[in-house]
Structure formats: structure tokens, C-alpha cells
Amino acid sequence: MAEKILLDIVTPEKRVLSETVDIVVAPGEEGEFGVLPGHIPFLCKLKVGELRFRVGQSARHVAIMGGYAEVLPDRVTVLATAAEDAAEIDVVRAKAARERAERRLAEARDALEFATAQAALQRAIARLKVAEKL
Figure 1 (cartoon, rainbow, N blue to C red):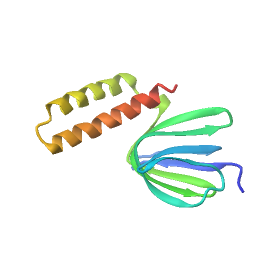
Figure 2: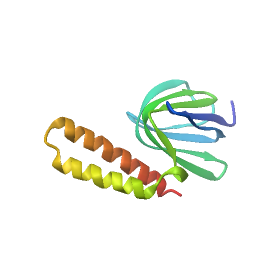
Figure 3: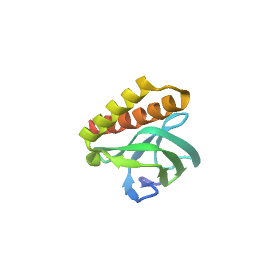
């Protein structure tokens, strides 16, 4: 059994992260899941939320905007729609996005506008949650 896991986080624009880690905890569509070295292989859909991982005693956090995760015994590959490390998040911009989404949610005239505003709000909240972990 491997003692570490290779974590790769990739978006359509770039490789966000490639690092050897001790544990990965991700926001699965059916609930949060954790991966340790030697985990059974699986593939799952990710929802908007916080992905966290630990290297030694250091914990790090990444905002994930949905996507897929492939888990193998020695690696976790995340194919994300978008992803931002906690250190990269512009808190002022994320707060403004949350306020815009809340306004749009309150003013929604149909189900499509409501769903679009709700998704934007979830993304802003995830970014703010991750940013506060610094």
C-alpha cells in the first residue's frame, strides 16, 4: 500500500495542482468523501464546494466549481469546471459576486433565472468558505 497519494486538479484552462498528499476530502455529488492511500478505485461527479487535502501537518483548501473525480489506489485526478486555491481567491470580488447573486435570486422571474442565480450564489459561497481557511 502506498503511503502517499498523487493529487492532480485540472481545469479546461490549466493544471491547478499536482502534489503528493496524505489525504484528500472532496465534495461528491452524493456527499463528501475522503481518500487515503490504497483506496478502492471509483469515479464520481463533484458538486460546487471545498476540496481539502493534507500534506504532513499542513492542510490546504481549493474551491471546486463542479466536475469529476477519478480515484485510484495511488492517485486522485480531479477534472474541475473551475478551481481556485485559497490563496488565489479575491475575497472582495467573491463578496461582490455573492451580493449580486443574492439580488438576482430575490428578483428572479422564472425558474431558469432562479436556478442560474442559485448556482452563482453557491459558487460565491464556496469561494468565500475556502478563502476564510487561510
